[in-house]
Image: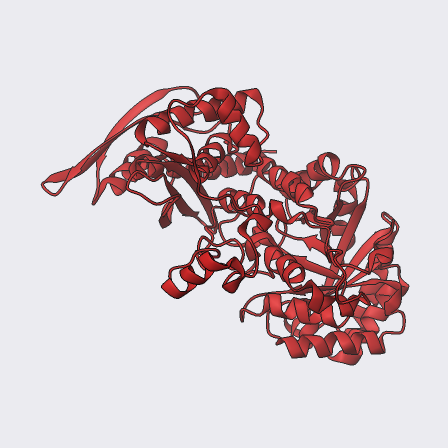
Length: 532
């Protein structure tokens, strides 16, 4: 079935692995991108923009791997971004060969400010390039998406010309980016309305929208575009992305779900129709959100819509009273609708492997025997320290133990810290190097965490600058698991690491070594590339 025959619903185009990864510090390796792609497929997204194949060997490999392993028959469309240049389009086509349904997404700037200062080309040159490169992409794949970058600041008559030419050259999807997040919902609505009225062949394609969140209007702008006939939305998990991010997938999807009776008339449906407006399995939203947060190291703010820790919490007595009497007095959706587990106490230190395995299945985890054993052993360790274990504790343990590690990186063998108001904070760290050598170092610091980081840095001898350290409690209580996230800067790159433990100093050590290993892997890859 072609995309154009599906215009009675919204096509969800997820660009977490492309635009989302452009968030500072959100760099992912191939294995992590693949894990997210598999989860996006489970979530039910229609199109996965797997990356920018021409950007680097790592990006090419990620797109290629996802195309082969996730882009199977019956799976999502796999897309690669490409500038409107032959080399980019060739790289995209090559990387996408293994996908059952490949898409090349090519783009070129069209606003006068971009033409003058970035491209240094005339309108006629851009018009010719757009037509030629869309046709070139079409020679490789049937499904071609075209984006006029900075469309919202492009002179309308020229925009209409470019779009008409792109469609005539073979584009099947036309995407309209508000590249700098400048528009208001009314302006976006007028922009889409103008395109539909002035581009004569626009009905031959799916019309798409890509909104940035610089003014906090990305979701509102995307919904306004939907009201004007847009049938594909480009979005990311948790709204991550360049600068202030993109429209958040979970916000778009749940807005269309909760307010479907409002939106149905825009799809020529009965107001009372029950059919959902997207193919998203909403119960997978929470799991996808936490996976992306953990692998990118980008924590979700507590007041984030849909997936924030406070999204279903009620502090006010009036609100609590209302929810107790009737949930819908202050809640417009149920936590279960996004797959958010209740914080129920279910397991303890006497629980067995079968009970643990069953609970993991309830929480949506399907682990290999090796990963199950690792997670169960860690569960027993934590259960010895905590009297009661919640679903959230178990999720944190599983994600910590099964996260993708750098195989040839540094491993922590031992962490010991001495601190107090009359003691100089001292950390003793033992690590195993990538070559298998066991080394130990002790260091002092301004506090226990600083001492740990000083000791690790002296052992690994890799220059870095700690630019962010944050601790998030997984559950309430003095014995709660703490999740530590660190971000390290090296030259112009940022590398993140995350770990959980009942001892936040131990969690900090493991989070730091995880970030160090990402940096180490980057340095090894760069070294091998430059030596060729």
